[in-house]
Image (cartoon, rainbow, N blue to C red; front, side):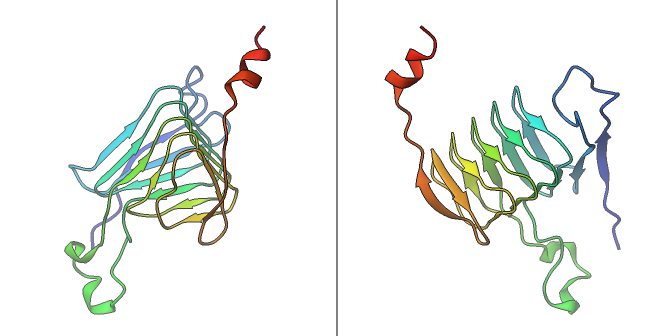
Amino acid sequence: MQKLKLAKILSPVAIKKKSIGVFQRVKLYALKSNSYLKIGNRVGISGATLSCYQKIEIGNNVLIGSGVLITDNNAHAINYWERKEDSKIKTAPVAIEDDVFIGARSIILKGVRIGAGSVIGAGSVVTQDIPQMSIAVGNPANVIKKIEFQIKTHLKKFK
């Protein structure tokens, strides 16, 4: 049985000037030597776990709440006789585009793409793609509203 390799546990003290693990430790698991985990600029992560077997990409300006799990794999096969073989683990890349907010205790499962500017409500389980500029909540997460950006209202705040 292969043990899970812990890529790194980031502590708040070790990364004072960064926004990963500011309040709670973040666990990043690279489960294979060729696992690909990309985290963009200005990403805030607190108390989350990322389990990467194949590929997880996180864009810029993303906020990930406490207790969030992002995984690109099933961790083990369903059938007990297949659990002995790592090759039976099902994987699919995860992509989280720019400006996404993922609420606390949410779970992002394999094969999911979350579109730019979207919000995932706390405690949601994301099992399918979420279009850009959407609010999705629930188990399984469903889009409940599209986010409309009104440029005139936004610009008035800065005058």
